[in-house]
Amino acid sequence: MPGLVLDGSRRRSYDETPMLDRIRIDPQVCGGKPTIRGLRFTVDFILKLLGDGYGAPDIVREYPELQLEDVYQAAKYGAWLASEKTTLLA
Image (cartoon, rainbow, N blue to C red; front, side, top):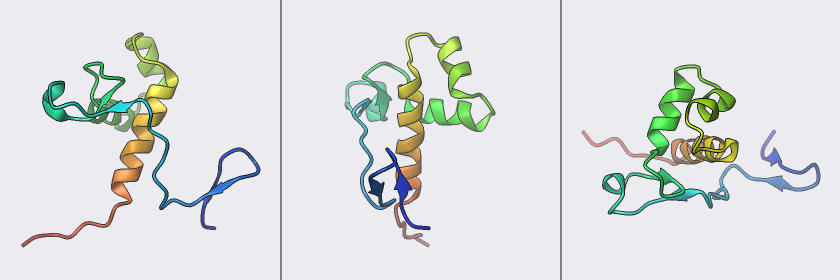
C-alpha cells in the first residue's frame, strides 16, 4: 500500500520530503550535525535514544527542553534519510 495517510483525507508518498521545520543544520552548532531547533540536541542522539527503547514521552521527560514534536521530527528525518538510495563505494 503506497503512501501514508496524514489527516484522513490527504495521502503522501514516501518519496516526498517531509515537513521538518524543527530540524536545523548550522556549521557553527554541533559541527554541522542536524539539531533540534538549533539546540545542542542532535538528531542522531534522539535516534539513538529511540533505538535504545526510549519512547518520545520518556525523552521529553528526561530532556524538558525538547517537545514531543521534536522527537517525532527527528524520527521522520532519520526515516527520510534512510529511504534515500545510496551507492556503496568499494
